[in-house]
Amino acid sequence: MSNNQNALQIVDLRAGYDASDVLHGMNLYVGANERVGLFGPNGHGKTTLLNTISHVIKPRAGRVCFMGEAIDGLAPQKIVARGLVHVPQANRLFPDMQIMETLELSAFTPRARAEMKANLDYVLELFPRLAERRRQQCKTLSGGERQMLSIGVGLMCAPRMLMLDEPTLGLSPKLKDELAEAIAEISSRGIPLLLVEQDIAFILSLVDRMYLVDHGEISREINRSAEVDHQEIMDMYFGSGAHDHG
Amino acid sequence: MIMVDMLSAILVSGIVLGSGYALMASGLSLVWTTLGIFNFAHGVLMTLGAYVAWTISSGGGLGLGLAAGVAVTVAALIGAGILIERVVVRPFYDHRDILLITVMTTLAAMIFLQNGIQLIWGARLKQLAPIVPGTVQLWRTTISAQETLMIVLAPIVLAALWLFLSRSRIGRGIKAVGQNADAARLIGIDVSRLFIITFALSALLAGLTGVLLGSVRLLTPEFGSEPLVKALIIVIFGGLGSLGGTIAAAYLLGIIEATLTFFIGIYWTPSMIFLLLIVVLLFRPQGLLGKVVR
Image (cartoon, rainbow over all chains, first blue to last red):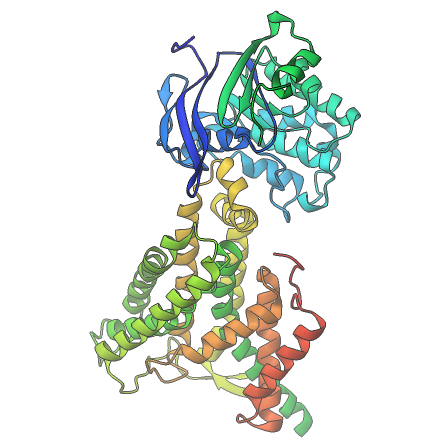
């Protein structure tokens, strides 16, 4: 389970806000080329976990290794520069910037700038709607367009691994399908994924393996090969007497 | 003909005023737009710039000439801007009341620097030698060549600032940080480095204004106080978060001030300007070109 081939390895990670701990020692890994899901109710630390990995929040204890190297002491921009890219939840991006401006700016680190042309072509091919609206300002975009742009921005950072935080939040089923297709296409290029989602069907359609998050800890790991059906997961997770959700 | 002379006099002196205001207020506006704080030490940075230039260049100081004066001022002001950011702003970035806290800390820095200037240079009035001597006839009105230089230089400096912000990587990064610092961080922008650059740039603009105005007005430790108040009015008047609005408001206020001074005199003009600001804010709370929500 723990080896240097893993894209991401997290050991006993603790973090929180002010006086309260949100993550009580998280342990998980994402293998090379693996797609891993994080599932669990709101307020149980999924977003905090991603924020701590990308160092928007400072970890209180524990280790985060990316491609075999510790990154838990690095500033956010250095983590992006290494290729671990976090697409945050409901990102409102840069309200007064146009789509193209935003995408070009997002190739900010030296490595991303070197790949800018190719990545820009890829993003516009993946999301033709962004190409159509290239002069439109971020603040005027619809929820779906904004989500596409958020992922596009992540791709412009030249990711070696992507962490997506609820990319389908508030979207229609049709848009969810479109995004699922795009995300599957991205990961088919060999980019490992860590995907946070509330939509169990969406997450199961995309990942190889998934973790259930409960009160700031990993409560269970589920392999895709185990063929767990949706109802079973829901029962396991929210079912009778398993946990006290006071 | 008298009518034309009068109009010319008002317009020319209005544009001279507006040029100084635009240089001064753009620095203040840049810091507001990027960091979301008001730097009340912005005026005293202008004073500092003028005094440093005086010390290096004039006969009463080291007498090294104007070029040396400007060069040292540029370096000193960049340093002063960075120092203010480090000492009185940086410790509070993570604090949710950063706006209120930095009102106090930058005011404290202002008082500290103003008294420091008084201590070092004394209260005796000083004046910089003009960069260009002589007078110029401009559309039937005679003004000093130094004021003409300001009229010419201000749009050049502001255009350079605009180009930097809209075309360069760092400049675009500064705009991004102002619009959403968290999202900027996640695309690999070193936010705190851009905060420092913003402060240095803003201080540089203040210092430049000081050098230009230091030969038109007399230097005292309070040299930058009135321009700071005007710059604050302009940034609010033009609309918070809009550099274009700030620049437009600077020239507009310059012309309005010149007009009022001509017709009602200098005693009533400041109060009338505040009245105008209140009226504008009653009908357009976001200012002339400001956004409704920052």
